[in-house]
Length: 161
Image (tube, rainbow, N blue to C red; front, side, top):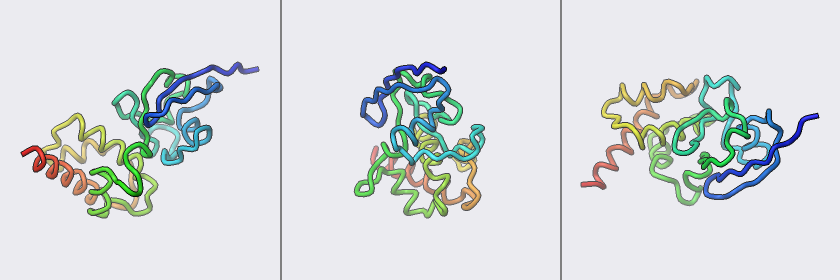
């Protein structure tokens, strides 16, 4: 018999307390327990990046983390970036640059790009591509995603000036 463990997490600014099985993956907790289905599960091995979220300010693969490991953490999922009525600048850039096609990888791409934009200068397309190298997309060839990240960087520089 498995004893559930009580966890407390803040996800997209909302505190959740739940009893979970110790073996429950964070991706499954987000999707199946909380209904936050924007976090996609692809490979379940941490290779594709579709399940990428932010945990305490760092991008993480939620398919490689147990829900109990997130106890006490502050988590951001793609649902926390913006809304249909008010997209955040990165989501707007993805829309403008046609940086998605089927959309399966998009949540993970958005979360990875959010992390990259917060931490790295991303001064060249090569740097952006290197940052995206842990996320797989079978539709876009990455060009439009790189364009979207570059557009966000450009706009943030213009705003700062």
